Amino acid sequence: MHVLDNVTTSQQKQMLGISTFAFTVCFAVWTIFSIIGIKIQQDLNLSNTQFGLLVATPILTGSLSRIFLGIWTDQYGGRRVYTLVMLVTAVAAWLLSTVSTYEMFLVAALGVGLAGGAFAVGIAYVSKWYDSDHQGTALGIFGMGNVGAAATNFGAPFLLVALGWQQTAQVYSIILMITAVLFFLFSKEDPVSIDRRKRNIKPASAFMQLEPLKNLQVWRFAIYYFFVFGAYVALALWLPRYYVGAYGLEITTAGILSAAYALPGSIFRALGGWMSDKFGARKVMYWTFSAAVIITFFLSYPSTQYVVQGINGPIEFNITIGLVPFVSLTVILGFFMSLGKAAVYKHIPVYYPDHVGSVGGLVGMIGGLGGFILPISFGIMNDLTGIWTSCFMLLFVLVSTALIWMHLAVRRMERAHMPQLNELPELPEMHSIHESHHKEGTGAKSLLHHSGMDRSKLQSQAKPEKSVEQ
Image 1 (spheres, rainbow, N blue to C red):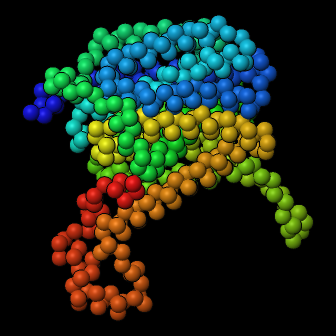
Image 2 (cartoon, rainbow, N blue to C red; image 1 turned 90 degrees about the vertical axis):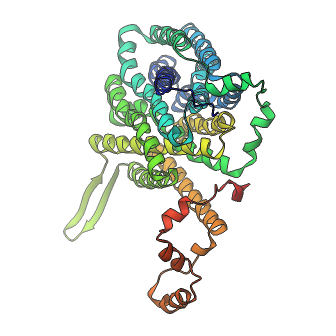
Image 3 (cartoon, one colour; image 1 turned 180 degrees about the vertical axis):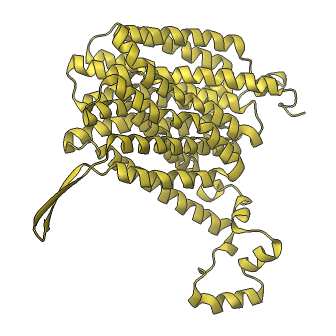
């Protein structure tokens, strides 16, 4: 009997719902410095580089913790690990309100960052309640918890103005503590852990859980996530400061506009999961990276004053992305990032069903490190170049690299598993050569024609590419 045979649809929805709610709260706490950090920067007179480090420090803890939290979830069950993570983070968030120096803020931020580790716990926990045909959609819905960043960008500025940053941190701590209690009361132990206990099967050791990490494919997935998630978090943290500095907006307005970016970057993750189940995760990744290359190219173009020597004298004009086009482009970018986040995690339970925690933890860790490294890089580039759009220049290079690597890996897989597709291009001057192939009946075109299959269908039936990249 399969372990999921006794799991009802009602139980699946309940576990998914409470897990997603808990992750939303955790993500809101994880990104709290995007708002209170602006006030702290003003109080302590911090540089852009120091501000970037401050808002990125929680992301470091949340990223590094994902690998071992994912392993612990596979070993001890998500219900206990999830609850413990939230309780510890709630204490750290409360202690945050008691410090006053920059160095102590960094230490407190490390503790708050544990909230980000909840992602690896939730991914491993939720995946154990669903079969492989529905995991993409379920994990996409769970990933909608990223909306916590939008909740912080929208709500925290008003708390900050009304209560001050110390009380804002305390409010977040109390909410997270209540969420931990509610999760423990309404969640249940996952069926896989129950089945292991009944059959007296000991969980795999940490060393065995880390075995798949030797595959290059896992690290390639991690690089994808470095952009679709790491850059998403980095921009959610950086945009409030960007709007205040580049467009001279008030903190409340900057927070609302940043939420406009973070919201589609979260809520459409469920759509990305469904699309990955329906059309294939690889195709969704192509759409995501292609769109991101175009958008980051336009966003990276700095405001430029041109002087052209015309017939009747100099002609001056300016190229600038106004506030409305800028906001619109960031919203579209957030939308495609949400699709990409779901597509990356659709791969993991399919390729590594017995190591979702460890592999998902590693991919999440590398992606989260993007949320740590990139804000610091944004601050450094601002200080060095004095150009606000330099952050998008960096993102353009990053996503272009990811797209090229993915395409090369896919082509390598096709050549290894489907050599019949590795033909000469369909060019007019090659017509006679292709005709000879058709007559021989050995070409891929003949095979596809007589079988009624197209190229995309044959690709979808290919073996997992991990064997190619080990």
